[in-house]
Image (tube, rainbow, N blue to C red; front, side):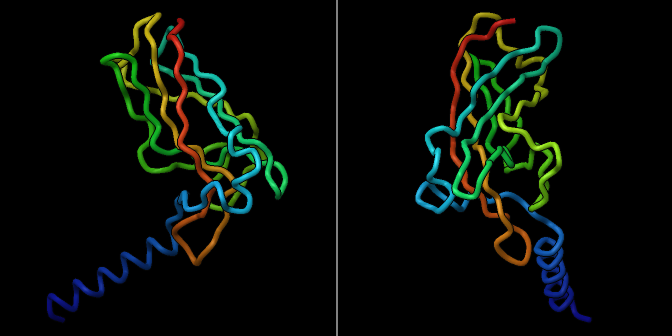
Length: 165
């Protein structure tokens, strides 16, 4: 077997495995799509708080119900915070949350959804400083093809407040 043939077969195998075994939320649906419009303006971060004893940030998010009934946050992406010169990134590419994985909803899905996220201690914001959190919230996710992308409504939101320990 020559080297070019091997590289070609290896590449095909890699694409096949990603397509059949990998799934990830994809924010392909926008405000004009069927179930994204109801409550679009209600999708947001409702609360952020900071743990005084450890580098933990607590966040609560909410998604209004849609045409297909109850909604809840399914995934987070592009999740960062900044407070002056302190900043951290929790999630780059979208990640399922709230007992979701691919198209499977866990039995404990909740809305609003509260979770905590660890950050690097050196990035702990000072008490009384102003912070901003940026987050892409994904909801109404469904399996649209034969693997890989899970199509979701998504909205980029931010939340600004003062750090209180």
